Image 1: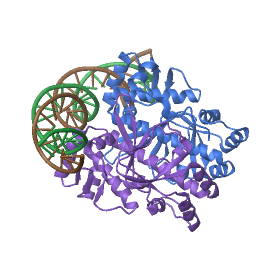
Image 2: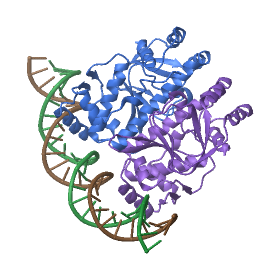
Image 3: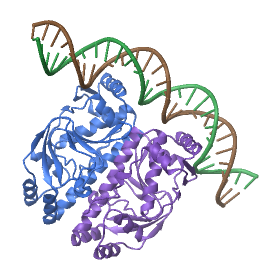
Image 4: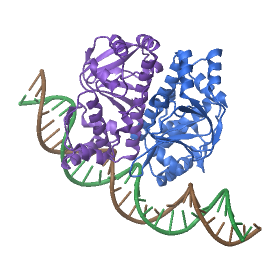
Length: 238
Length: 238
DNA sequence: CGCTCCATTGAACAACGTCAAGCTAGGTGG
DNA sequence: CCACCTAGCTTGACGTTGTTCAATGGAGCG
C-alpha cells in the first residue's frame, strides 16, 4: 500500500530510483486503527508524522459552543500531519473516518531524509502547500457555493484524489454519516439529507450509509463549477 | 520596514545573528504598488516570491459565475506567495487592498538561502504551514460562525497579527470596502453593512471607509469565540 | 425482541440574500 | 467656490436558503 504514497507524489513530480528508495526506507510497517479513533489531538506535542496507507481520515476544529468544522479529508497515500514536522503541535484534531492503516514516520527520519535529499524536502514542502490549496478551495466552497454545489464539489474532489492513488471508479466508501458530511460542508445534517435527495433525484449522486456512487460525474462537475487545477496534476518540475 | 518581516519570524522562532544577516541579504529594495493592483495572477509561472513590507494584500479565488472568495489577508512582514516557491504557479490571484511596498525575492535566492541554512528552510516551511492554519481557521469561520462572529473573528485575527509587527493599537487601516469584506466573509455587502451596524451599536467595533477602530477587544473575542492558538505565538523551537 | 444509531420527513422559524431606492463623502472641472 | 459626478454606504420590503424541533422509520446487532 506504500505505492499509494509514491503514486501521490508521482502524480506531480518525477522520482529518481534513489529518491524512491529513500522514501521506501523512511516508512515503518503500518498498524491498523479503527474507525472513529482520534489519531492526533490538538495541542499534543508531535515527534512523528502519520502516513495514511489505507482508509480515510479527517481533520476538524471545534468551537467552545460545540460546533465542529471538518477542514480537510485525507485519502490513502496522504501524509495526514506532515505540517506537524514544522508546527510540532497541531491546531486541530485528526480522526479516522473508517478503519485505517497508518505508518508513523519520526520527524528525525524526515529531517535526515531531506538533508540527504534536498529535492525531496521541496517535494514534501510542496505537499503541505497542496494541502493548503485544498483548504482554500474549501473556503471557496463554504463561502460561495450553494449546499448542492458544496456537496458536488466535495465528491468531485474525492473522485479525483482517489483516482490518483488507483482507487478510482464511480463507487467508493467514505464512511462518513450525514452528520459528518454536514460538519465538513458547514450545514446541518437535515439539510445534507435533503440535498442528497435532490442530487439523487437528479441522477447525479447516490450516497447511502457511507457508500458513495457517482451517477453523473460531468453533471456533478457542472453543478459544482468544479475546476481541478487546484489539485496540481500538472505541476512544474522542482 | 524589513524589521517587520524579522518580527514576524521572531514571534515564533529565535534567529542567530548569521541567520538574521542572511535574511537581510536576501531581500532586495522594495518598490511601491498602488491599491487594487493585481500582484500575482492565477496560473502565472513564478520565479520570485513577494514579500509585503507595508500595506495590505489579499488572496482570492473566483468562480465562473462571478462569485469571489477572499481566502486570506496579508499584513506587513508576510510573504504573500512563499508557497509559490514550491507550487510555481498559484491557484488564486493576489491583489493590493491598499497602497503597498513590495520586495520581489527570486526563488533562486531562497533556494540558496535554505541550502546554506537548513534551519531557515524549516522556518520558512513553518511559515507556509502557518498560512494554512489561518486558512483552516477561516474554514471554521465560514462553516460555523454567524455573520457577526465571522466579522468579530476577522478583526481579532488582524489585531493580533498587526501587533506582532508593531502595528498594534485599537485603530488600523484595512482599506477594504464593505463589498470586499463580504467577499472575505462569505456574505453580501448589504448584510455586512447591517452586521457592522450591529457591532457598532453594541460598542464592539467601528468600521468606517476602510478604517477600523476596535472599541471592545474582549467583547469581540467573546462574540467570535476567538482562540489565538492557531497563530502559534508560542511555537516550539525548530 | 428490544436497543441504538442513523436516516427521513414535516412544519415553523431564523438568517441571510435580492432588489431597488436614496444618501454621503470626496473628487473634479468650470 | 460651486455644481456635478461617482463609488460606496445605508435602508426598507420581500424572497430564498437553510435551521430547529420533533416525530417516525429502518437497519444492524446482541
